[in-house]
Image 1: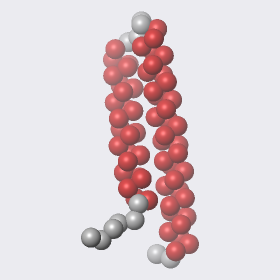
Image 2 (image 1 turned 45 degrees about the horizontal axis):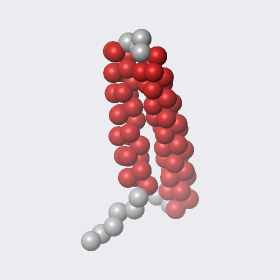
Image 3 (image 1 turned 180 degrees about the vertical axis):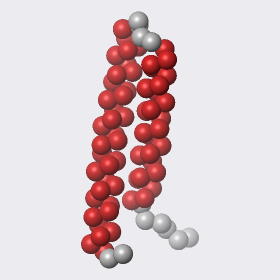
Length: 72
């Protein structure tokens, strides 16, 4: 793979990470709002929290793709 294509791929990964971070933040806000209201559906909150965790894992995976491997 040439260097130009590699940089395009990294830019795409960075854009995806930013989109996922925004979604993660939005979920955090939504969960907080539902908990503050107090009349929230526990199952809905559970699903939102699970989605938030999946996003966190995906963000970590993509960030690992951007970090060059260091040979010890």
